[in-house]
Length: 400
Image: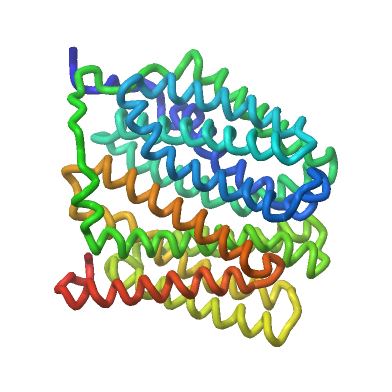
C-alpha cells in the first residue's frame, strides 16, 4: 500500500466548491447569530451570561477540536470525521431553531460546535493530504482566508435580514439547510485521502510548551483574535441596547471592522517582508493599545456610537491583521519536525485563552460598555510586548 494520499482529479473550482462550505459554515455559525444576541435572554427566559456562554462554548470547542479530531481523523480517516461532523452540525442547527428554553439551546449550541470543529479539521487535513506538494495548495489556503475574511462582514447582515423577515429560528434553519446541501455534495465526491500506510509516531508537546517564542506569538494570536471575540460579544449590547441601533444598522456598522481587516490583509505580505515577524507583532500590539486609548476616551467622555465604539475598532483591526499575519510562523518556526502537534497546540491554547479570558471580561465588567474590550486587549497586549522584549534580549532576530 502506498503511503501517499490519492490525488484528486477535481479542478480547482470544483475542489473549492466541495471543501469551502464546511469551513465557511463553521465560522458563519458564530457571526450570523450576533444580531439576535441581545434578544435571546428574553426569548429563552435566561440571563445575558448564559447567552454569552453560547458564544464562548462555540469558540472553546473549535479550538479543542484541533487536538481531539485531528488524531481521530488520522486513525479512522478524513471522510467519516467530515461527514459525521457535518451531519451533527446540521441536526443541531435544526435543534437550535426549535429550542425555546436555555438548557436545550446551550446543549445544541455546544454540539453544533462539536460538529463544526470536526468538519473543519477534516477539511484542512484533506487539503494537507492532497495539496501539500502541489502549487494549488497555496491558492486554496489564500482563497479560504479571503472567503473567511468576508464572513464577519456579511454574516451579521444576513442574520439581521433573516431574523427581521422570518424570525430568529430562520437563522439556524438556514445553517442546517446549507450543511445538508454540503453533505449531499460530499457523500458521492469526497473520497478518503488519509495516507494508507502512514506511520503514526507519538509526539510530545513538551518541546513546544517550553518555547518562549511559541508562547509569545501564541499570546499575540490570542490578543488579536480575542480582541475581535470580545468586540463581537459586546457590540450587539453596546450598539443595539445602548445606542439604539436596529439589528440591520448594527450589522452594517459591525461589518465595517471586518472590511478594514479585508483591505489590510491585501497588504500583509508587504508588512511581513518589511518588518519581519517581531516587527509586525510589536506594531500589532501597539495598534491594539492605541485602540484601547480611543475606546477609553469615548467611554468616559462620549456616548455609545459609531465614532466612540466602532471607529477605535478600525484601529484595532489594523493591529489584528499585523499580528495574525506572523503569529503562526513565529510560534511554529522551530517545530517543523512536529508541525502537527505544534499547530494543534497553538490553536488550542489560543482558543482557551480567548474563550475563558474574553468571557470573564464580558461577565465581570459591564458587557454593554467598552470596558471588557479595553481590559482584555490592554492586558494581553502589554504581556505580549514584555515577552517580545525578553525574546529580543535573548538574541532572536527580527524575523523570529
